[in-house]
Image (tube, rainbow, N blue to C red; front, side):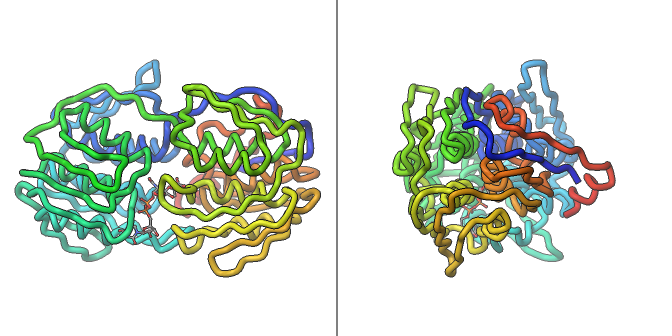
Length: 431
Ligand code: EPU
């Protein structure tokens, strides 16, 4: 299986890095192309395994996808002949469930595998199903599949029990072609939801309020093609800023958006970093100082993102002082803690809170990635651990980070990839 090897304890990271398009925006945007009557061109697409999986899923349905020389994806949904998302693909990427709303709204039927559990929590999709049923869909769950049918969906007033990102996106996509107006209350406010709404509006949808707790969608009869650039990845941005902080270095991230990262920037300042921002860049400078440990509680946007929790867990391991990190979004998102302890971190888990006492230094060890953000935290810890840290099961990181080792190497990190065998890769894909 491919591994990443990091020789830690070197010079602080220094330099600049370009941020890619957001994974959690491009996936729903790719799914939304199913709603269109014409070709959609998507730009600022990150090079990620989850993007490849989504392209494979749409391709299996008969959608035509071409990547041009500018790395823009041209999606033409007009050749679609199947409304089916098989277990084999959905089990490798939960976001596949995002095709449910668009297929139902545009073609009146969808058969989509239930995603099942995942390393960070049980992650049910009951609220997606409840919301689509409120729009008038007839939905059965049997044999591990969601089977949905509808003539034309009808606008409805939906109050979500919990703020769910992909749930809000699925319902919003279905509602754009419904008859009448849909209101989603307690909607997720994540910037990726706003990006999806902007893309849908560019196709001719009529969505107001995305980014607030109440989204109002006036149904339209049809959507047309459009050209749209995906917003920058705020989690990749935050990960590189933590890389600067943990190595006591100075990193400028470019092609990003400081306004969608406020909670993370405030925590970096609390840790002692000097943060400077321009319209599309952020610089994090630790001036060679040891970071201070920071208390964090994760919650839906605009609060501190669960997707940055593991990276700050790594930062706290070598920071000055004791701090607590409380995870409120997912019930099992502390798998990285056990691996960080293998590097010498002093972390105690108390329910959904990790209490970390910063140590002077970490020592390299072989560690295993368990999910996407956990793998990022292990790479960050590896940057400062004395010796050679080998991070196994690195396929998790390729799902959501575009060329992470090249980008870190460009900043001065001593990092390289050991390729796995084909057999390993096959096993990884099935894991
Ligand atoms: N939930 C339910 N029922 C539902 C849907 C969600 O109980 O029908 C619960 C979940 O179990 C969780 C909470 O609601 O406890 C919030 O989950 P949410 O639905 O918002 O998560 P998601 O949409 O499945 C997206 C991102 C995740 C990110 C979360 C939270 C995508 C493709 N994925 O997941 O990204 O952690 O929102 O912000 O957008 C990642 O990138 O590493 C990642 C896991």
